[in-house]
Length: 134
Image (cartoon, rainbow, N blue to C red; front, side, top):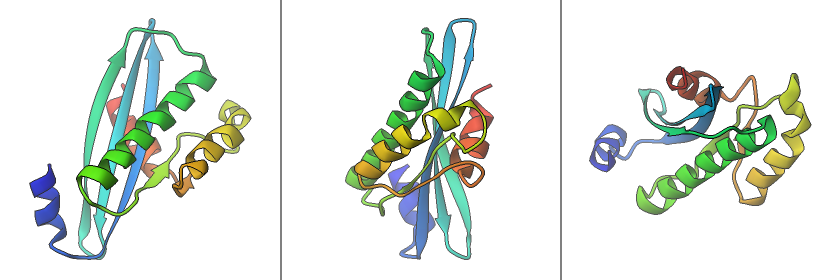
């Protein structure tokens, strides 16, 4: 992955986004985290990983876990891939039940020094990672 990213970027201007989505079913939760790398003016690529847990989460705990996966991935990107600080895309918004935890999660992310986006602008979580949760 590291060599591919270096070749892909070729010292060009770029942006990095990280987002996680999850899906619960029958006592199992699937978490998918996406890393999206956009080479400005030349397209994008992404990587993803999927984790399965045999556990039940309430909505609040599951959304916190999604944020943790994204933040751990962002830290890995900064420390091991030497890329710019990623923007965190959260699978929460001002509508629906997730608005109840919006301030807690965005405060958590902002407190660790990351910029973030929420729905409908959080495409790394709501579009890319979402593809791999079903």
